[in-house]
Image (cartoon, rainbow over all chains, first blue to last red; front, side):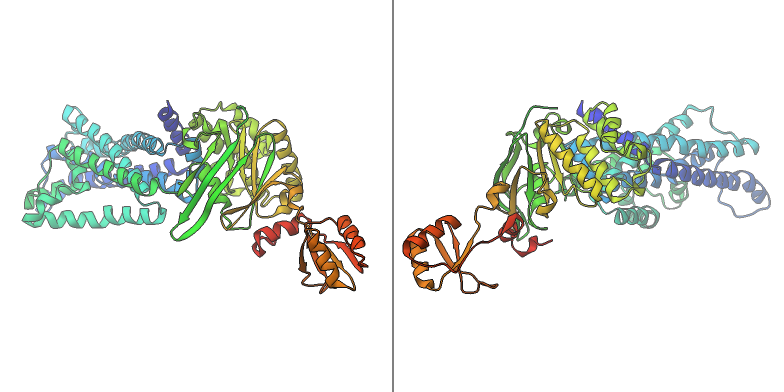
Length: 275
Length: 303
C-alpha cells in the first residue's frame, strides 16, 4: 500500500517539473540527428563512395537496421542516467527530502519507489528514442532501396531490449544520485564517465588482449550486449575481437550495477541525518 | 484530527563529531496548549525537532508522540504537521503540486490541498511556481504542508521568521486557535518576544541543555529586591537571619546596595522594622520575562 502511494507520489513529483520533457526533447532530437546521419552515411552516401572506390568501412546490409535503430540506446543512454540522477539529487539540492521523508518515513520505501518510477520513465525515454531512431533511419534505408528489417521479428526483439536497457540505465541514475547527493558532482561524474572515461577504456580493452575480458563488464559494454547491437561494438568487434557478453548476461551485469549503486547509496547518504 | 497527543522527550542527546548539540533533554509538551521552544540560535532547537521527526538519528534517548516514534506512526502526516524551514521546495513546482505530491504519498484526499491553501491565504497564488514566492509566502506554504493531514500535533520551527507584522498577528491568533481545538502545538523561536504573546508554556534550552520548563509567570519568580540602609551591615545580617540570599548589587545608581532574593519587598520592610534599621532604599528590580530569559540563555539570546 505504502509503496504504491510512494510510487504515485514520485510520478506526481516528476510530472510537475519541466525537466522530464525537456530532457526527452533533447534526447529525441539528438538520436534522430545521429540516426539520420548514420543512415545517410552507410546507406545513400556509402553507395556513391563505394562505387567511386572510396575506403569506407563496409557493413553488410543486414547489419545496418540494428545498428541504426540501436542508436536510441547506444547514443541516448546517457539521458535516462542523467534523468534518474537529477530526479534523485534534486531532493537533496532543494531540501525536499525533509517533506518526502515526513510523508514516507520509511526511507527504503522512498528509494524503491524512485527505482520503480524511473524505470517506467526510462522505458518511456527508450520508446521515444526508438521513434527518433527508427523513424528517420527506416525512411532513409527504404528510400535507398534497402531492407528496413521491420518485417523481421528479431528487429522487434532488439527494439524491446532497447526499451529494457533504457529502463535499467534510469535506475542506475537513481542509484548514482543516492550515492552522490551533490547534483553538480553527480552530473559531472555521469557525463565524464559515459562520454569520456568508458569509451576510452572500451577502446583500450578492444586492442589489449588481457583487458578484453574486463572491458565487456563495463556498464556501457554490458548495455550494448543486452541490446545486441551497437555502433561502437560493430566497429571494434571485428578488428580486435573485443569480447561481448550474451544479451542476458549483459542485462544482469547492468542490473547489478544499478542495484549496487542503489544499495551503497542507501547505506551511505540516503540514511544520513537530514539537517 | 487525531486525539490529543503528548510529546515526550526523554534523555535525548545528539553529538555531531565532538560537538554535543543536544544533551540529555527531558521534557514534555502537553496537548491543548501552545508551547514555546526557546533558545538562542545554535542552542539545538532544530536538531531536537528533527530528532522528534525521525530526520536526525539521536545519539541517545527518545522523542515520541505519546510513546510512538515518528517512523512507527501509521499515518504520520495525519498525526503530526511540520513546518521546519522556508526552503524545502522545488522552485520549479507550483504550490498546489508541491502539496499534491505529499498528499498522494500520505494517502490524504486531494481536496485537502485546496483547503489548506485557502486556510493559509495563498490560494490565489497556488498555481505559480514557488521559485517566485516571497519568504512570507513560503512560510505560509510551509504551514499549509503542516496542516495538510489535519494533524493533532503541530511542530513549527521559527514560523514567524520573514513574516510581515500582519502575518505575525495572523500566525499568533492562528496558533491560539489550533491549541484551542485541543491540538498539541510546539513552536520554536530564538526570540522570546516573538512568541511571548501566543504561548502558554515555554521550554528553554541553551547549549543543548534544558534550562527552564514551565509557564511564563514562573520565569519571573526569581526577581530581586534592591535595598539599602545607612547601617548596611545591620540590614545585611537581619535579612540573612530571615532566610534571604543577599548579594551586593553590582552596578547602577544603587552601587553597594544589597540585592535580595528569596524575600518579597513587603517582607524585607517588616524585617528591617523589626531589626530597628531605617531603610534608605527599597526597590523591586524590574527584571521582566525578557531579562529572565536572557539570564537563562546568556548573551547569545539577545536579539
